[in-house]
Image (cartoon, rainbow, N blue to C red; front, side, top):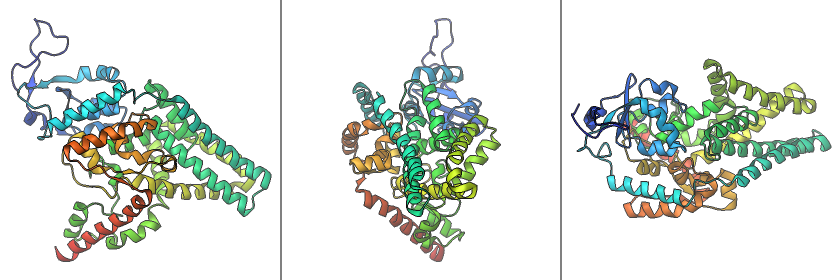
Length: 444
């Protein structure tokens, strides 16, 4: 540990100078039982705090031994509040001669991105239009009401039942996009209100768990498309993704499934089963094993409401089948929309890139239109959402030109595609990865 350096916050002339550290020293503290990170050149020991971190211990742990300044600013709308929690964890500062960025990251690019964020703040692009979200919630409730009225007045024949199922699928998909907004704290200034409404929407309107979503989704945002850190690319040996993983599986002669056909069996086990089987099992087990009784109560309120509404029409067994039919349809919608922005992009091991470069490598956009915005919950602006996760989605189109300009300045590719091409690229990328696996499996 070096000597000297700048004095810590609140230091007086009688206090000793704050300890200073080099990046080499900080990067040694990147294991489960010993984790440090850097925010605004200050060094924090998060080893014990990680278990109490509201976003989960993993998301903050993914930045152990690194500069986490841009991630810190991206995830927390009220920086002053969060700094109060950081203050007791302070152990020192970066040594004066150390660069602000670890792993030889591009300092000018980082500086330019932070200037862009400041411009977005000055343009008030983090300010919410509450009418937008009120109308959005209203249109979900209207769909739920229309679905019930169709059965009430037209009975349970095939046509009314299918029509009701499609409407409820739409309301569920749109509620999924809406809970995503509150989960990212992008609606209200106070985090508490975001958390409360988030639990209502994901729990009461969808029957899922807010804490399960937070702990999973924030990891995805912190390190998108990074193996061992992004749970969304943990495919449980069902698929191989990107260019690195297929070759590694092939070299090791791993063949849990015929990966050269994964672009074909994707249609059978990907979109149809993710929500009704994998997610539902994972959500329920997570709430029970973690004894998350609050989220479990919210989820139960959804099931009570659903079955009390539809058992009189279909009976108990019929209502269960109807629920799974809705989730089967919603799962297709969810998988295609969420994966079109990520699976075709770079999927790799940790490279320790700067915030802008890591997000652009893992995300792409889909062209803007009224339908694309609504259909994807504005996740067609995936780049802007990943760079500024607390920004209200109705402002993504305003910040997008600034992001394009910054990418052009630094020679970073900014990908934007038509919707159909983005969907086709999912299958294309799975096929290419499968071919890489087969070649490595047979010849390496």
